[in-house]
Length: 368
Image (cartoon, rainbow, N blue to C red; front, side):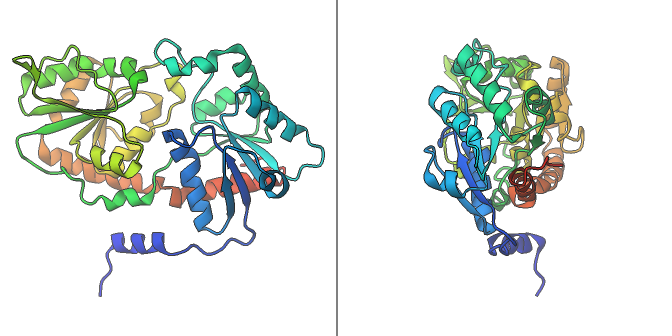
């Protein structure tokens, strides 16, 4: 019997991993346990490390196991008063057997409090100084992108880039729910929170052009709706614009994204965005959904222009790319290429990066 590559990949994923020679003891100390930051930078890593036989605990409370048994304590975005005091006490302990790893995946020093009101806390002088002090005291800092590594290297030279990843189970959504469908609709999808209005503005005019020119075009927004200025109104009722709120469940979120025909990924060229990763594009790729994305650093290393998506800048370029992807055959071809490109970005394929970094930190070495 011939076994397909997809079946082989599924069997490998479900098979318990061989136990490591010496299990790492890792304590994750997350900033919160309900956000996407926790999912992508703590929960995925925890689950895969456990599957591979390492000892891992996760809590927002610093317990005895972490202080007495952990090889590595990973503190995520430690910056407010009490956690910072604890971090600095842990760093000062003269006989400590653990390494302190500071984890952050955003340039928290460059958040604009106008466009991101939730980021005001990181603009507070005491919080900013705590971040600097805590990064400085860490034995290692882990970040998600090279530009972010350059930001934090001002205060700590032992910085390791551990890229944002996806879980292999996303490929179980097979085939993507709308790939290749020709039902008289083309759904352009956008996702973002209330902090992404500035990003959306880079695509809004072109989206309006396409919606006005072709009645097959539809827009689906996930998370926040920015329908202002779009021309599709019929008797006061929006007809080709739909909206769905955020869901904290990643599986549900991925199924919603899989209903896109094309993902729109505008990103403003701000200092904060310069350190962002291409995670939004990566998830769409894993679902076989081609993208039209801003020509910025976060997406240049991921999108192969013309092969699995388009990198654009001007209003005319946005419009031209969207019009090209009105063609179902092109969407199928690009979506298949995108899906294959995403397979190398799973946490299962990349967990060795975390293991190597944590082992180096525990041994008092600089990661390479």
